[in-house]
Length: 105
Image 1 (cartoon, rainbow, N blue to C red):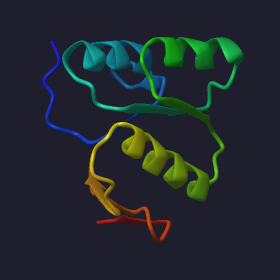
Image 2 (cartoon, rainbow, N blue to C red):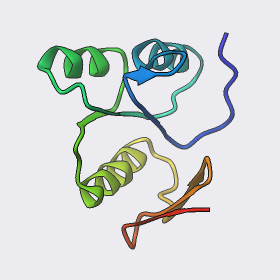
Image 3 (cartoon, rainbow, N blue to C red):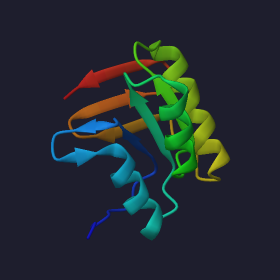
Image 4 (tube, helix red, strand yellow):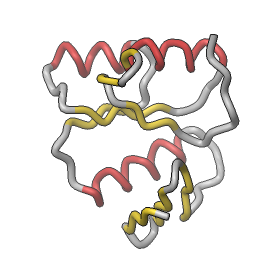
């Protein structure tokens, strides 16, 4: 079972140390409407389609451009209807979406 906190957005990789992002996406979507973006090296069409069909709001292949990622984050948050925030803090990172800066705390 998954225990969720209240997150504005989840960014997942397909490959995770203790499972895979597809399963985690499915579990998150069972209990929450949290927007999800996949950020992964798996860029084949079948992977993209699988991620989106599982409920992801976007799918970005690595390597990626930081400004594009931040723009997609803002777009997904705006579509989700939540307050668009300029500062996102998670797991020791601070992301300033308006300035395009990511800082490690």
